[in-house]
Length: 194
Image 1 (cartoon, one colour):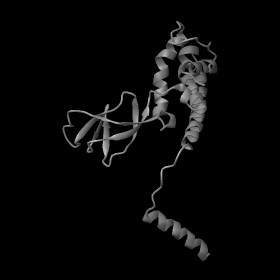
Image 2 (image 1 turned 135 degrees about the vertical axis):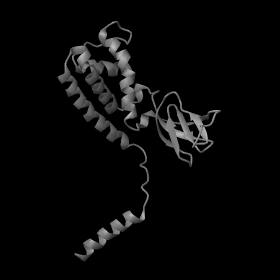
Image 3 (image 1 turned 90 degrees about the horizontal axis):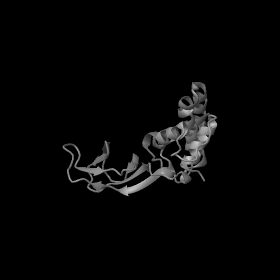
Image 4 (image 1 turned 45 degrees about the horizontal axis):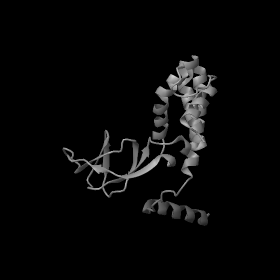
């Protein structure tokens, strides 16, 4: 089971730096882990609609409506990194930490930063460790080439993690339309006439 500390230590090991015992250690590695871990983790979380980071909530309406265009303003949760979808019938827009909508009640699905490392898939944990290693290679071992190698591995692991994550659950239903149906039927007729 992964923890924030075990992921940081995995990143440190990848670049040949000694492990830390806690984020409060006095070493340079511990200070960098403490300063950079959350920022880099949140960047990766924002990059994909990870199933383990999804949350649902009914938003709290703000007392003051927007100045123009939309009818209502809603406060986004403090842990909201990115809104995936709104379940209201109307369009919405996010401005800063506020969601604007024509609907008086808004339910959303969003990516949360309030995640527990034990919920991460092993491939996400590995992608995060490589991404941390890429970021920390220069400040800890003064090597751009090691950082570039770690970044390439991070991208590979991130691709795998996204693929695995995308296979979980129900796929969004594809809607039929006149154009795609005529293309499919047209292809079928062409093959019969040959």
